[in-house]
Image: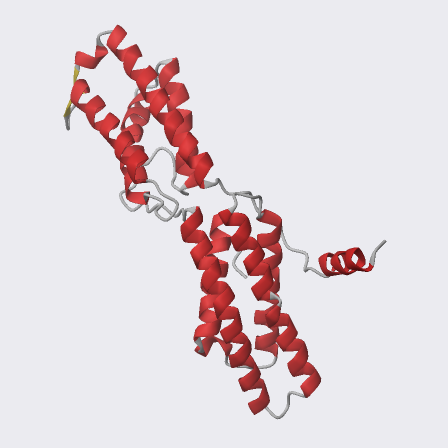
Length: 265
C-alpha cells in the first residue's frame, strides 16, 4: 500500500464519529417534486371537470367556495412556486401558500370522513412530501407555521461562513488561552488543532451540498467535532461565546443540524 494511501486512510480513521442524520432533499429533488405536484394537480383538475364538479359552489356555515375560482388560485400558486424557487431562494412563503390551499381540500375530506378521488390522494401525498421538506405539518392548520428549509445555495453560504468563523475562533481561543496562565503550551496546541479541524470538514460539507452529493455522515462528524470544541473551551473556562468566531461556527452548525435532522452541538 503506497504512502499516500496510508496517509489518507489514517486521516479518515481519525475523523470523529458522528450521529448519522437523514439526507435532506436537494434542490433538484424539490424541483422535481414541485413539477410532480403540477402534474398531479392537472390530473385532479381533469377528474373534477369530467364530473362537472369544477363548476360547483360549495357552501358551509362560514364560507362559500367557487370551485372554478379555487382551482385557478391553486394553479397560480403552483406556477408562482415553480417560477420563484431558486438555489439561493427556497421560496418558503410560496410553498406555504400552496400547502394552505392543498390543506383546505385535505381537511374538508377528513372532516367529512371522505377519502377523496384517487387523483387527490396522489396529489395530497406529494403535497405532504413537500411539507416534510420544509418542516411543515401536513395538513396545515395553524396560522403560526413557518417554513424551515434552506436551499442548496443558502445552506452552502451558511457553511462557508462557518469555515471563515472557524479561523476567527482559532485566533480568539488562542489569544484567550495565552492570557490564562493556568493553560500550558501543550494544551493550547491541542485546542488549536481541534479548532483547525472544523474548517476542512466544513469545506467538504459545503462542496457536497453544492454538488448534490450525500452529506449526512460528514455533517454528523462536523457537528460532533464542533461539540467537542465547545466542550474543550468550556472545560478550559475560556470566554468563547463572547466573540464572533464561535457565533459564526454555531450558526452554521445549527443550520446543518436542522437541515439533516440532528441535535445541535
